Length: 114
Image (cartoon, rainbow, N blue to C red):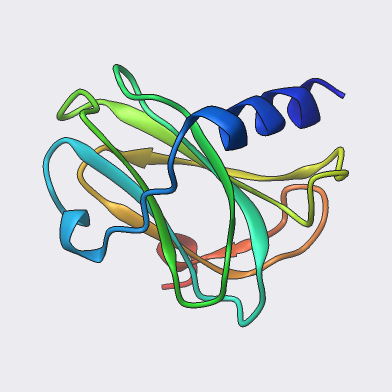
């Protein structure tokens, strides 16, 4: 219930940042949806607003203004009602791509598929 409440408040207050140009910036943290279908993503980094949004396949969700050199968290959920999802620690300044969603924190991420 907390995730849904937080998600709904974020949808109401924060605009979506799907900024390919911002990816790779030292104060930006992004997650890219390379799965082939839409999922609910969250991006959270120190000194930046937490964003939660449905992200279509091939699109990215980014927060800007994060602390350079810090570590943030990107997460994915099947939908707004999901209780479990997948999360990944990612250094600020990088983009993590989610390749395949699997329940209970077993998603395939670009950084662990090499």
